[in-house]
Length: 143
Image 1 (cartoon, rainbow, N blue to C red):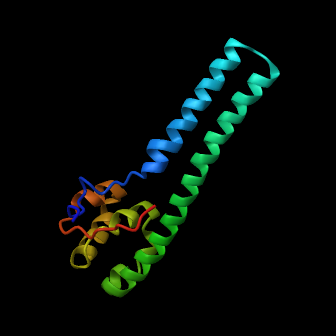
Image 2: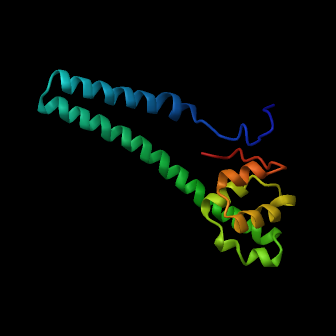
Image 3: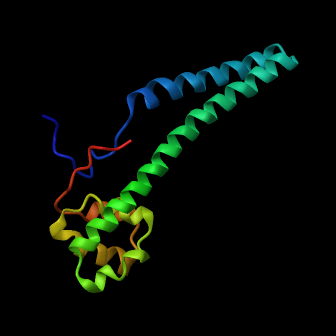
């Protein structure tokens, strides 16, 4: 059974993305640049450009997935906050940034109102919010 999720261990690395795909594409791009410098030609330069483009496509696909995840979190947290927060804080939900909502998703229901109040009044960012959470609500369904 995995250890309970906390601030210290909540970050997730995707092995295929972080340890296989990106490193291979980065090494390939560096190798194509080296080849273009060592044997300059239109072809070698074009291969280096293509190597860069492929690396950028891989990064863009990852960023799209993270952006969709943030949108889903915003929706989920808005629904949860509308259900849990007192009336005066419900009115302030639109003031929360996406980064703040991403941080707040880890707060247990019992402390959500306190963390939302702190986030709004002190203009906390997502990381500062996560560091203040006392009872961690794990999120294992992440990209």
